[in-house]
Image 1 (cartoon, one colour):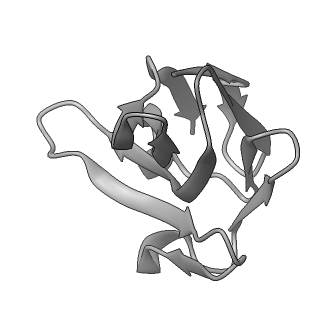
Image 2: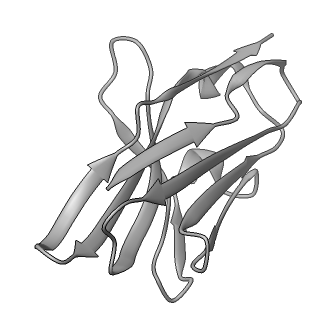
Length: 118
């Protein structure tokens, strides 16, 4: 399986961006899907996650501003980011836990740069 991300870019503070991630390949089903981010000199951190049943969790720093959603029929996950702040600047990575014919696997996207100017 592979993940393809899209939607990063440069916006001013207060603006919005929408990140999308599509999973494809030998997938039987997808369990968890999530977005992580990593800023320079920082560890990768969880931004938001969503289960196959639609339960979500968010980092405290993005609650009320970011929304994660998924389309199980299309194997996609979307992160809608509003009221963006300079501290949201990072490389954002899509993550999925999938079940394949060979068992459970974890996959990461290639990363997409998000830059927020002040």
